[in-house]
Figure 1 (tube, rainbow, N blue to C red):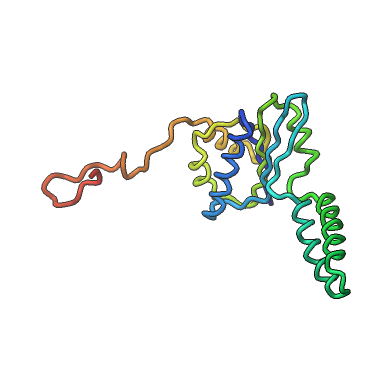
Figure 2: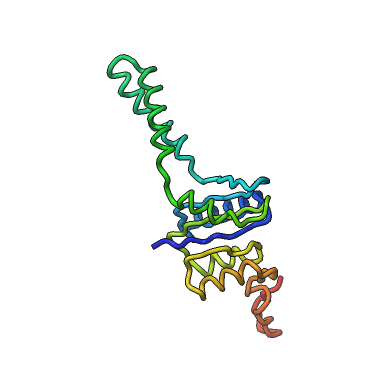
Length: 186
C-alpha cells in the first residue's frame, strides 16, 4: 500500500530541491517513490503542476517508434512516425499516472502565491533513515495518509533545526590512559 505525503515549501526551487533529495534516497534504496509532483500557486490564483513524468512526451516518443516501425512495413515510414507520434501524444495526454491532477490542483488552491507543495506517493520506506535525512529541512506538512504517530515524527523531523552528530564522534567515551586502545577522537 502506498502513502501520500504533501509538504508545503516557500518556493518552487526549495520543493524541487527536496524532490531531488528524495530521488537520491530512492537511489540508495531507502524509499520507493510511486510519484513525486510539485504544485505551484502562481499570481492570479492559477496552480501549475510540475510532474516527474511527462506522459504526453512519453506517449509521443513511444508512438513515433511504433508508427515508424509500422510505416516502414507499409513503405511509408515518415507518415507512420507522424501518425504514431500524434496518437501517442494524445494517448499520453489522456493518461494520468500516480497522483490525480485534479486532487493536486484542489489541495494546492489554499497555498499563498509563490508557495509550492511537494506531493509524494511513497510505496516503501525505511522510516528512521529517511527521517534522519530529512531532519531540519523545513517545510510544513499539509496532508498525509500516514497514521498520527508517523505524521508527528515527520513533522518533528522537518522542523528539527539541530541535525544530530554521528554517535561515534560525540557519545563514545575516550579510551582509558595506558591501555593502548586508540582514542575515537583523532
